[in-house]
Image (cartoon, rainbow, N blue to C red; front, side):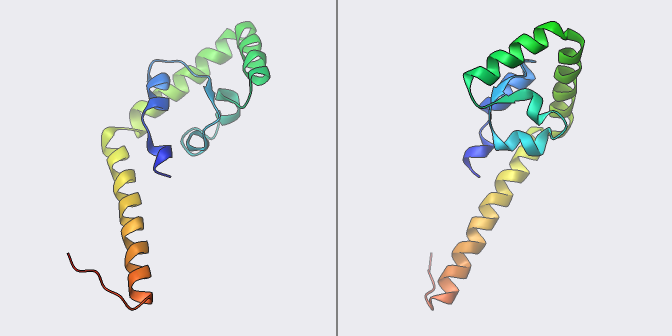
Length: 107
């Protein structure tokens, strides 16, 4: 999950580029357009480029939806919360493992 929290994919979206390689994180963030904005291979990429070059209004609608959603819901504060949740989960897993094995770590 830590790898999924990287910022690079979002930089493209904030720049209003909307086609990106397959990333699971976008399924959660943009469920309504996930299939439209991701591709798994070059054949899919070229097909999407061809399609959206013919349907510019649909492309613009998707770009605007992604951009507005990203600006409103994916702020630094939101990302920090996600990171803290991951850290907290890892901490709890570590604590659980230490308690079940009968060991305790001291700082």
